[in-house]
Image 1 (cartoon, rainbow, N blue to C red):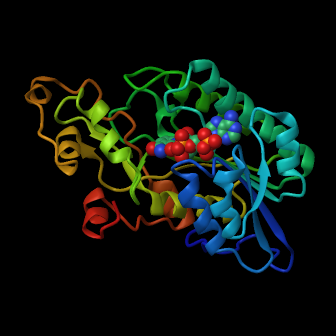
Image 2 (image 1 turned 135 degrees about the vertical axis):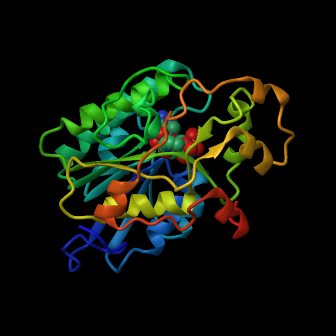
Length: 300
Ligand SMILES: NC(=O)c1ccc[n+]([C@@H]2O[C@H](COP(=O)([O-])OP(=O)(O)OC[C@H]3O[C@@H](n4cnc5c(N)ncnc54)[C@H](OP(=O)(O)O)[C@@H]3O)[C@@H](O)[C@H]2O)c1
């Protein structure tokens, strides 16, 4: 499967293809959808499910078809998947939302979207997930074969609901589900890198964050979407160089608080992910192997 092309790969170039994307107005979606549209061949179309019509406009101008609705609304889901060949479920609720909303969006709506897709005859379903589903570290980079082990300082409703969505979607007979587990995503003006200090300020100096640039997350998602014959497969997407709490402060031009050096890292392998599988099977190579490469390229 090495070297799967970013373009096409459906094996039916002569027919029209429609891909539904949720979560397009979010940090990942707003950078992924323009790339999905840009690499589309003639006859490959993109539909987005968005809550707010005004916020859909920039994507409509790029050529996306728009369906307005909430992922928790079954009617909106049915409308969104009608006639679609593939789904990329990017939507999630995790930025300061109550736990009930996290469960409703990340698990319940994702599973309902999977059911709606199955009913509508959708052929591929990419579930965008998170490396946080691994839970506690294993003393080495986690691989896609590792079971979720709930616990650790980052566990909560968000990873728990994403892990449960993965489990239920993968169990859906007849649906070609692919899971993409993302790292901490940054770049292209996303304020996430600055926000990382909210956590990194509480960490030990050596605690590391595994990251991935938006360009590489989009690259990984496109590879997972287009590759033939990977139903049920899980892929980690990340760069090659997790950075420490000290470096996160430096990258943000912030002073490193002295307390960082007094703490010890309770789990040095927490959410440090192996990317061997996506490299070997799908030809993924990060364009920005480290946050420093992205900084040098002016891509932060
Ligand atoms: N960013 C990261 O570092 C990171 C790391 C690991 C995994 N991920 C995964 O990547 C995906 C995207 O994350 P993100 O950072 O882009 O998140 P985000 O910026 O918070 O965006 C979330 C998106 O989901 C949409 N959404 C939320 N609730 C919805 C609902 N009830 N109905 C319809 N749409 C809804 C939001 O729409 P509105 O704009 O209308 O609110 C928005 O488009 C998620 O699946 C997340 O788990 C992200």
